[in-house]
Length: 292
Length: 315
Image (cartoon, rainbow over all chains, first blue to last red; front, side, top):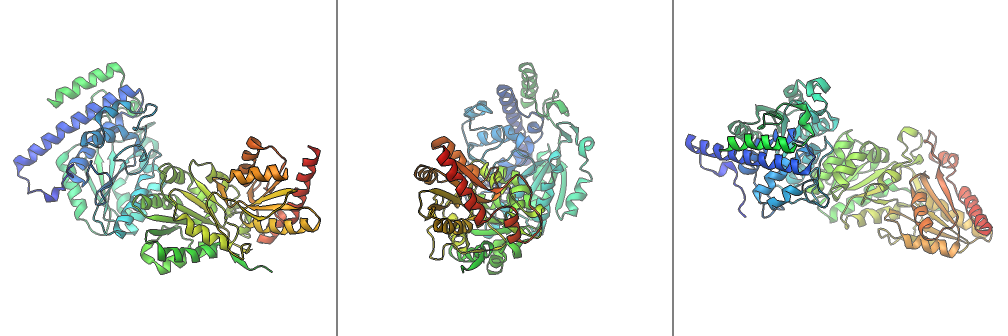
């Protein structure tokens, strides 16, 4: 299989080409959302809201940004992706299957006994998963270790770590943030899926994390805030992140929990609840109409 | 008089030798490199050493990431922080993914001494042993420590090595052939078997010599690998002696004694006496005073051996 090309290797985009790329990615995002709601409904458990909120981030990374090869997941020069907010596993599984890491038929085995698609990412079981996550707050530390290892081996691969906003309440995230800046790890790019909700309610009500850009800046990071559902915005942020030297970059991606299905959008209830059969029908109607 | 060397000193030395031989070895520490002796490696290989500051959870996560990038990380701090503060990071980031991280914890047990109970881990073997797939090794002396540090680099998977702060007698003056999961018999005997690990192995050897003078022939077994434990050695000892004593500088809840008892009750029920710390925290004092205070001495082992033999005869 052919590795996905880095966007630098492409010829400069014309407006027309950019539109085509974005249209294609939007269709991809919709297809991934359809897979997610189907998987979750079939599994009868899982996290709907936070899976739907990070779809554009994953699609942009796996189809436009990252150097990787679904035919050779151990490619030494690959960019690494860590899903620190492990409960969004359905979104990552849907992307990995679509990219060709495993058969799409596996998606409907999510969370079932004997599946390779565990409730949270398991690097021992799933092709394309770099490290095991699920217990929040641990992914960025593993990213730091990978980034240090890549530096020792003089590889120019990048490490992408996707965090939830509620997850930032974990102290370990800030230990990792401190160490990334201390070691000048400009090969790390963290992305915060800033959907504003956690299980018990609004992040600002449960445990306020603002002023978020100032916190990251204070820890020595380059900070970019973008619309987490806009491919052009995400793309330009990743491009800037790649050019920053001597410090890590965090992209605060403002997003909508449950994005793409009005019924689930910005609703706390759908953090950890799958669509019922009726809700699935409504969701698929909305998603397929926007996919046309 | 046997030579006295702290196992942490042997660790520092072995790590440098290992670093010369194995370029994949990297070392992490949490602001304790002068105490854990990883500072020796840091000086020799500054590009392969990472001081992670006083942040043990991130230290373990970073070690996991380095392992995922193909390195062989040795992650060091005091036992209480490695096993306690960062337990869930060891579980989720390292062990759950079966990553090749070697956690080498120093300052275990009450021989930490004057720093007191806050710093004396009496639970670490128990905590680490309960994590699926985690290998747990407690070397007896400096000679065995060097062997362990070199040997574990040759085997993949998460491992926890428990070392101490204080100088301890060299038991294996003539060398030892350490292998993961294999107990070594230091003295043969058929009246009772004393199974020990760490600083208690030297005490067990002393107890064995004194018992021998009294006409009691004790088998002395050094059980440096607590997990996976050498079941065959325990079963043979139980069958051939009919009475066991375990000796550890750790709580008797969940440590070596528990691991031995798990094998004994399943295969060959015989009386077992436990020498160890009895559901209590440590306290300040010198390491020798504390070993006496908590009953971790040759005379306590001897008394336990006599009790086990008596119980065998009553049985």
